[in-house]
Image (cartoon, rainbow over all chains, first blue to last red):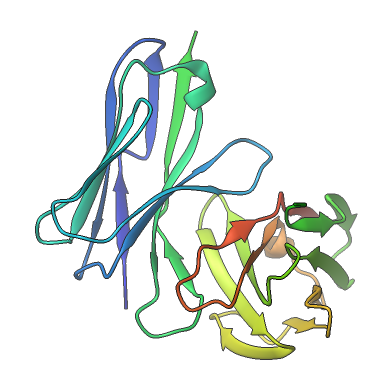
Length: 112
Length: 113
């Protein structure tokens, strides 16, 4: 059974600060996705990482995939209130069609 | 193009009742999946449909069911509602599943009282 863990569970920071959230699995990821879910909305895909050691940047967001493909991190530089939301890591199931396994999420609040 | 559309957005039901939620996928998408999101359990997979066939099912009781129509629109039904069924129900669509990017709707907020 695939299990995804995320830390921290909650994070409250001031605007302009930097932060990193983490995701790890009990087994090797085939690929990993990060989603952001804003209050009252459905999750929106931010990025997919596939290769161990891969780094992808999306404006102020930097995503890193661990060399062993068992962990990933999301770093946000100079956080803004618009970054507030639930950050979910997810992995497509290794065994089932279109079944995505989600982590519990990190709830981020950026205070102006 | 229009995104995934879910109706209704909000509803309140009484224990023991049943509810039907509707999902219209992105045009051209043939795979529709459903998820339940609660504060305690997070996002959990309910089932996935492709070309009117259920290909995949999560670990939920038989009170949760769904179907997909020939135009790819999907409905899910929950019978004999329990308080614990209160949740955000999210629908997602993709071109054909199997690793394609999935796109979520805004969800249907169900409260059972």
